[in-house]
Image 1 (tube, one colour):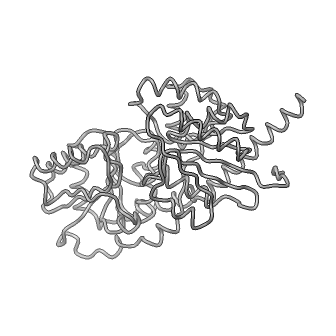
Image 2: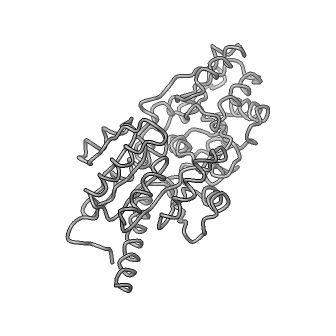
Image 3: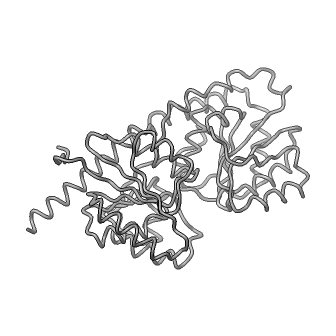
Length: 380
């Protein structure tokens, strides 16, 4: 039986911003799809607003925005502490940069349930953040890993006990992407038209864009174009790399895209050359739209794509990536490609529908609340 107090269960979600990214997109969908008869979600952004903010405000979801100015900003922390004290939530749910501040504040205020979602593996995490994250992990009642890869990383890197971790993948509104699918089936005489492959991702070392550009310089397929959507710290460096390779007419950095489904549907295939990945929600989007996918064979990605649903290459291997791109460009209209596309889409629909994922989170909320109530009753 669900925990249903007279008043709704207040959940404060804490993260830095709603910048355009898979984790931010997922949290927005999670909040929008909660059972609002039982839960009262409140979003606290301690740095700024962001891309998905309007979707929440349109549904009258309370959003509180602070402006963190420094990496260690005590004023920001005390603002967060004061807000939580006033709201008196039953649950604090953090993710991304919200973990350290959010969990500490919730612990100080004795919030009944403290929960975090871990969105990525972090091999490049700096030592200071690692120490503070490891300490604050102890404040959480449960940590959700979005994949088995993330679960394994949490156990290895932070020495978290396995029974403290629950694996719940990120999901998405599948209808938004299924409605955009179909371009692949409409191709005619593919070899007589210019093909466009592409990718979406933050322009950071993790996402492997430099490897993708190197692969493009090795292609044998004439005229094949690549569109790279996203923004990040490597914009200037990647722009220079494209120019030095003489690929200005074939590889384009197009910045953020406002409609990922429409962008993906404009492509002939999707490439995901990440060097490491917790899950990669854009893989779900591309698969639902019906794009054939070439991706790095790394943990996280391997939980979504295999050799029956896409094409895998060793991470960081531009030569292998170029070979696979050339092959796919030459065989895009083949029965094999269509078979893998349909198999992936069916698998994604069955596994990653946001409604199914929200049900799993709500069950976890209830489980943790019951545990807390039972504990308090036995110790009082």
